[in-house]
Length: 247
Image 1 (cartoon, rainbow, N blue to C red):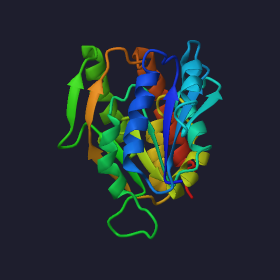
Image 2 (image 1 turned 30 degrees about the vertical axis):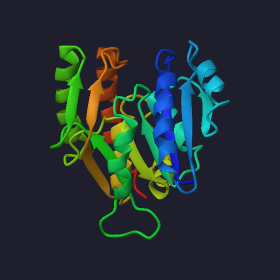
Image 3 (image 1 turned 90 degrees about the horizontal axis):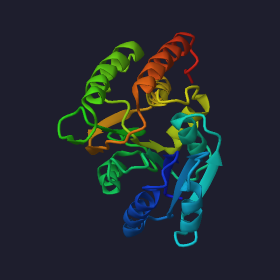
Image 4 (image 1 turned 180 degrees about the vertical axis):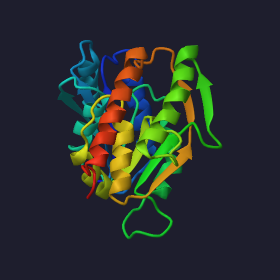
């Protein structure tokens, strides 16, 4: 299979159908050799998310629902990555804050088949590099905290050259995904910087490219999430010092 598109969800009944149809519409238009699959990794939603996805599987052949425990977004992504088949594997947010067609910029950069000098194992979306565009709808304190958090993450993690580790639009080759996600230990909001550090410690090449990002007003990232992420950052640093992420 050419590509697996993973969507982590929790109580997304208001927008999940629109998101899936947009993703499927883009992927269907590309006629990828080997085909594609869309995996909705649902963290025990309490609303109609799972029911809506199940209904859509009847009309979207490549769609599959994975029902898991609610252990955080990182757990949903981990479980999705461990169950997919694609040679290219990506996860994207359930609100399509980065629109599906922006994948056009990512796919040519990934190592496919025989590795070349100019290809990458991991390609991530960013709003902190030249060329990015942000449509801001969030509260002012989230914008400020987000900026501060990025600098703290870059300093503590050692990923100084990665300006935006937290964007929900990340692509992996099969080889990188199969090496990184079994080593993942953080399953909350901080999982993004951990999987990138695991990739770095295992010698995978990472490319950060600009995206157009629409910041929704109803994001699930709140003040508590920032505090939790800081603790996860410290946990990751401890793991790294112990050599847990090495190949």
